[in-house]
Image 1: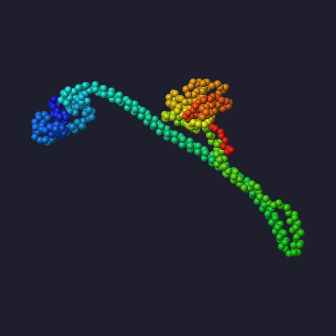
Image 2: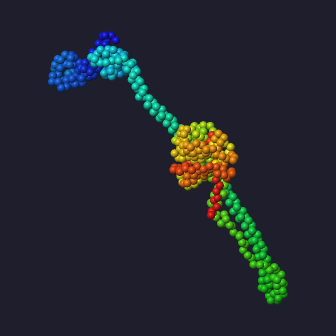
Image 3: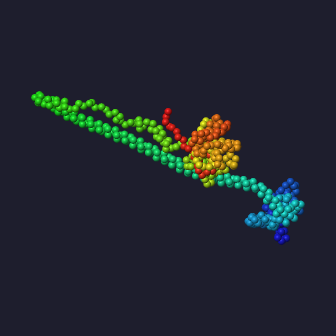
Length: 467
């Protein structure tokens, strides 16, 4: 910038505020100031005088300098319309690039500003040096926010996955509900058809019996009616004729068979009680054979993402990793799944088919079990690991079990009140192991497998015959 243009730029600045004139006024001495700056300068002074030449102003309300006002507004408008990058890197007063940073005013300045009265005696540093320090400070302040943002983005991603999984669960569950009810409807429809058919069969049989009985009675009635009518005709004839035919009529009556009195047919009516008595109970009693009951149902929301559960949630095997939400209930390291219902009193038992699978565990887990990471606690279980049958509880070391043969079916028996967890070999009806512990919280059936062969909860057989 030339000295003339620099001087012209300075002539457009108010000597009081060191900024471009805003609403300038002119004194009788020809010096101009911002109207607000001059009023502040005069406030508290008894004599209104020029801040520069100290000449007394003849007017307390000096006139506006319209020409200077229009020129300054044009310059300000041009500065506002200039590109943002240019406004940030160029001095608004001198249109010079910022080179220094005033530590006193905490603002960037150009080399011309350094020598102005506004920055007399101030301390300056190169702008890139100050900017480097400020950027590092901002980076330190930004790091926690960036980490927090990452956590929120990960949480949102998990919520998005959970929302999609909820929809998938609803579609899956609704489909199986409809399929189960379809089977129940088919069963009930077949039951209805069979019972109506039995009713019609009884109707046909008993109707045929009554038809035959009616036909036999009709024949007897016809024969008797003929004999009676012929005898009555003789009785109604004249005496001579009656005497002539009476012997014949008497022989006819005496020669007819001596019929027994007709008797009602026993059991002729429909056995309504057999068809309607305890109808719904009898149907339900038959249904139990078609609809098995399993005492333990697996909770898919707890299953590790490498476990595959059967559609009826009664068996589990290890398979390919699935894209499942990492919800708080799910085990994320060990291939564990829990039963859906917990127990905190009384006794309960369930049978598990372990088959030929290797590396599995069954037992119970406390509700407070640690589900994330490699250190699950509060577990009581037996299993097959590295070719050996072992028992493990809490943080105690493993105990090897001495068994005569291979385990294929196991009964788990929990007596919560007495603090006992027992295991039995169903095939040999022998006791395997017992854990003794004072239980203080809800316990859930526990299953752990890394085998492609499933662990299966065996359906329970029960009697519904009333006592």
